[in-house]
Image (cartoon, rainbow over all chains, first blue to last red; front, side):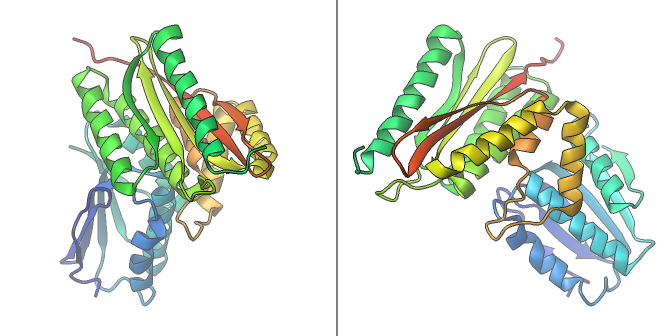
Length: 117
Length: 196
C-alpha cells in the first residue's frame, strides 16, 4: 500500500506521493483535525516501511498540531528503518520552515538533510 | 441576568465594536480583515490565504507573512475547536486585523464557559510570565510528549502565537451570564518590510 501511494493536495493538506522507495510530502499542511489526516498514514506504517528508504518534505506552512503528527510519522519511519533518509526542503528565504525543520530534527533524533531551493 | 441567547451575541458584538473602533480611531490602524459571526473551515482557509496575498502585495517580508499565517490559523482553529455556542446554537466569534507601518494587531474573540475563565486566565498568565527561551522549551516539550485530542487540537495554539510573534498576549474576559463569557485575545506582530 505504501509502495505507490498518492494523496491529492487540498487547500490545507499536502500532496503525498510515494514511488520507487521515496515518499514526497509537499504543499501546505494545516488541517483542522490533524489526526484525521495523519492517522491513516501511521496505520499504514504499522507493518513496516515497505520499500521506503527516503522521505522528502517540502512544506510551505504547517500548523502546530500537524507538526506534532508529522513528528510521530517520522519517528515511526525511523523506528521501522534506522537508516531512513529524511530531506527537509525549504525556499531560500523561508527561515520559519527551516527553523521548524531544526525543531523536528531535534525531537525525532535523526539527522535531516536540509536543502534550499 | 437575561436568559436568552442574544445576550451572548450582544456582549460579543459590543466587544467587537469596541476593538474595531479602537483600532480605527485610537490606534490609527488600517483594518486589513475582519469577521463577526461563525467561522466555517472554508472561511478560515479563505481569510488566511487572502491576508497572505494582501501582505505580500503590501511589501511585508516573507518571515512576517509566515508569522501572521501561523497566528491566524492557530487563532481561527482555536475558535472553531474550543469556541462555545450560545443558547441558539451559534458559535459566535470574531476576528479583526489592523496594521500600521510598524505592526499588525490581531484580535480573536469567542465564547467560553464562565467557569473556565479562571483556568484560562491562569494558563495565559503563566504563559506571559515565560521568557523567550522558556516558551521555546515549553513548545518543544509539548511537541515531544503531546497528544492530540479527538477534535484534532494539540493545545499548542497560544504557545505557538507567543513563540511566533515573540510578544505577550493581551486578553480580556467579558462576563455574559452565569454560563458564558466572551473571551478575546490580541497578538502583536512586528512588521519587517522588504528592502526596496
